[in-house]
Amino acid sequence: MSIAWYLAVSAIVFSLGALGVMTRRNPLVVLLCLELMLNGANLALIAFSRMWGNGDGQILAIVVMTVAACEVCIGLGMIVAIYRRRLPIDVDELRELQG
Amino acid sequence: MSAVLFFIAAIGVISGAVGVVVLRNPFYSVLALVAHLLSLAVLFLLLRAEFVAAVQVVVYAGAVMVLYVFVVAYVGGESDSLGERLRGAGHGPGASRLRLGGAILAGALLVELLIALLGTGLEAIGGYGAGYAPGPEAYGTPAYIGKLLLTRFLLAFEIASFLLLIAAVGGVVLARRRGGLEDEDGREALTPLDLLRPRGTGTMAEGVGRRPS
Image (cartoon, rainbow over all chains, first blue to last red; front, side, top):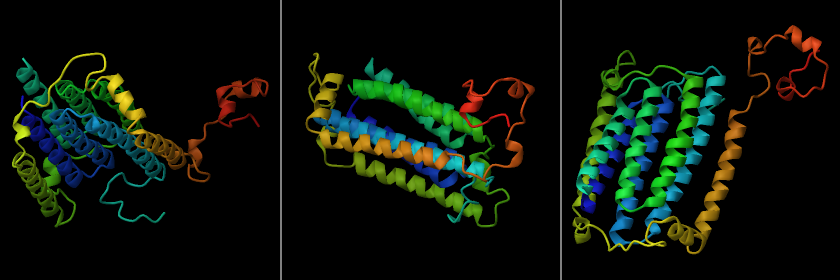
């Protein structure tokens, strides 16, 4: 398959992730949708890397995976802290950052 | 052959992504994301990114998703489906319009991305990629990636490792138990076994600070 097909799939996955981030209200699902957006970007990076036969895009994809792992670690820690305080797990209710 | 494999994997990727966004229960969303990640690894393999595909399956679909499953099992909680979200069932008068606006924005983003990616003047997009010669240090193999990571991209490698360290410390700080936050019934009562057992026997209960008084 030509590179354009992979790019189309990556655009679709990225937009689906953006749709989830904007419409879902459970912060866990919002984090999952952020992962979707990062995966769409990863697919585009690796497709372009294949296009030029150059490994730089793959290295950037690995770095993006590292950043995603950090984001999951911090985000899930925050969700657990919110749950311990008996606050609602809902991004519409959690409008204020003050403790 | 590769075209058939591409379409199977692409359908898996997109249906997994739709499942993450649409499914009502967060646990099923996590499972849909696992399916999405496995199909994405097949796409990476088709693009000759063998090491990245392996990392995707082992680290992402293995370790990170296990963390998600643990937190979903701990926090739980039902989430309404996308249809109810779009109708804004019982969340104020402006909620449904906001959901619809989000959907329209996502559609506009998709159109814009497709125009930007496919409408470029790059002729190489229609091609099948650069030439590929199999070998022990060919493009995409662990040896190739390792050589790049430890020579040209050494600084990025080190910064990523520091980022992981900072995130690990931050996760521990965020999720630790603070004094006075947990309520009284969270503490378990002493059992008769605690009183019978001599102190300092090194049990797990003593390790977390529960001692017979």
